[in-house]
Length: 177
Image (tube, rainbow, N blue to C red; front, side, top):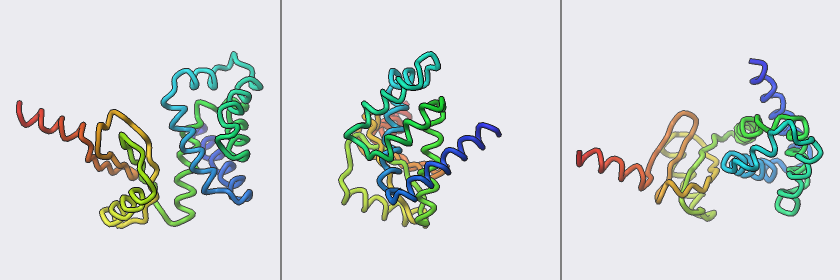
C-alpha cells in the first residue's frame, strides 16, 4: 500500500510537471520508451538501482543516455526519480503516468508488441481497429519485441489480443500433438 501510494505520488508529480511544461505528450512517450529500455537492459537496471552507486553517478548515467535523445524535461524527471533511489519503481511510475495521460485525453493505452517498428499510418489503423474491437478510444504504444516473430500482441488493461506468429505456431504445435 505504501509503495503503491509512493508510485502513484511520483506518477502524479511527473505528470503535472510535464503538463505544466506544455510537453506532456512528448515526455510521456519518451518516458514510456525509457521504461521499456530499462526493463530490457539488465546492465542499465543494475547500475541505476544499485544503492552502492552514488546518486550523482546514477543521474550522470541518465544524462549520458538521454542527453540529446530526449527533451530536457524527460531527462530531468528520470534523473529526479533515479537520484531519489526509486529507479526500481520507475517502470511502474511511468506506466501510471502513461495511463493518467491517456485518461486525460479520454483514451486507454494499448501496449503493442511487434517484431518490427510500426509507422504512423500503421499505428493509426491499429488504434482504430483496437478501438472498434474494444469500444474505447485507444492510444497505441509500440514495444519492439523480436520474440513476436511477426504480427502483434496487443494488451489493453487486462485484455490481450495475440495475433503473433509465435502464438500461431504454438497453436499449430498443439493441434499436431
